[in-house]
Figure 1 (cartoon, rainbow, N blue to C red):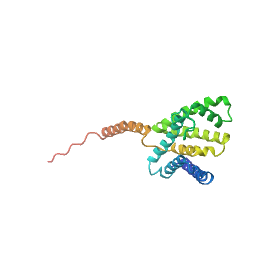
Figure 2: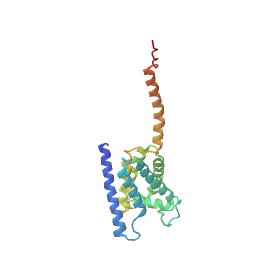
Figure 3: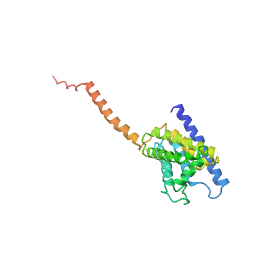
Figure 4: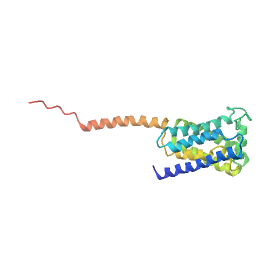
Length: 224
């Protein structure tokens, strides 16, 4: 394990501890109702499993990939009204107009006229990265892109919104998880299938070369 990957894994563990502490504090002390955020707890739990078992169980990389992909894709579905109308329980925006308004509040330091452009750019990025993570296509690049996008979101939220806002969306936790994933390989991915398709002909070519170098099999000596 490289030193850089060790540092990233420890960073993920620190961020996970902070997120878990906030979930407990917010759900059990500050706001007894509705209590613990179930979605946030599930996301933190999945990333905790990944953090502990990524070296022993390769499927944990698939787990964190799917969690991040679904987070992006469901957010995109939400802003197009596919999860319900505005104001419906569990729906953050409900249409693109409300999402543009939210984007303006997150990027409060940017000109108001940039709101629609930033909203479209965020939607295209989340959709593209979400599909790439779900399929495991160009996984390292997709994970790094997700980490960079989430870092921008987290910093923007910290500047323009109350500091605890990013905890509601697990922004820095998911960012650290994607950064860790960029150092790992994952099964059940297009990348792995592509590697196997290239490895097969290479192995057959090596076998043919070895057979040619060995020469024809020697004939058994006839008894005198």
